[in-house]
Figure 1: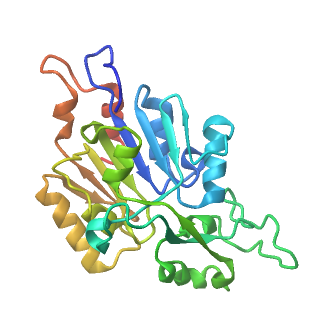
Figure 2: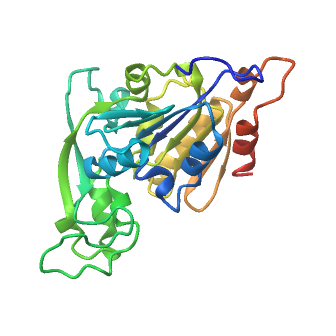
Figure 3: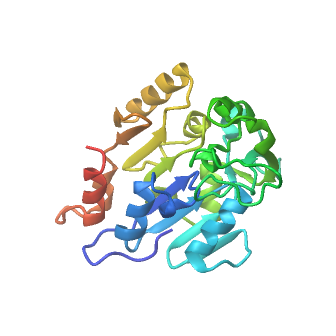
Length: 268
C-alpha cells in the first residue's frame, strides 16, 4: 500500500479510478486532475481497458514503456477491465480474458475525430465517442442517435478481468488505504460496486456514473451505499457518496489533510 506517513501524521491514502480513459487530459474529469495536482504522496491507480487509450495514458504518465502496468512516482496505470466475480459467478483466476467492446483506434481519444478512417468523413462524431466503450455491447449501440453506424466503430478486444479486490492485491495497494473510488464504467458501474466488499474497502468518497444505469440498478446501488453509511447526492451524470472513513486517516490530535479538504469541497 502507500508506504510511509505524511508529515501531519496521516497515512498516505490511495485514489482508485475505474474507467480512467485519458485521466487528467479529459476536460470532463475533474477528479483525475485533482488527484494528479493535489493528492501529493497518494497512490493513484488508473484503470483503462481500451489498449490504444491505455497506451496514450501510459505515455502521459511515464513516456510509454509498452508494459501492461507502469508506474511513475505514485501513479499506476493498469490495462484491464474491472469485472464483478461475485455478480457473474466467475471463479477467481478462472478466466484469463474478457471481451470488451472498444471504439476503433482510428478515432482520436482526445477529440473523437477520425485519425485514419480511409474513405470516410466522420468529422461529425461527438468529442466523447472514444469514452463510450463498455463491457456491454448494447450500451455502445445506444449511441447510434449521436453516432450513425456506431456498430462499424466497435472493436472487440480481449483484456484481463479483475475485481476491485484482485486489482488492489495485484498492485500491492492495501484495501484499507483506498480513500477515493471513482467508477465510470459505461453501464457497468452498478455491477462493479455490488461486487465490492465495503467492509474491507471503505473509501471516504465514492463517485459513480448513474446516467447509463437502469432505474432499478440506480435505486439498488444508492440504497446499498446508504446502508454502508454513505450520504449520496447526484448531479446530472454522477452520484457522489460521502462516507465517514476520513476518521481513519487522522490521529485524534490532527485535522484532515488538505487533499481530503479538497475532496470534501468538490461536490458539495
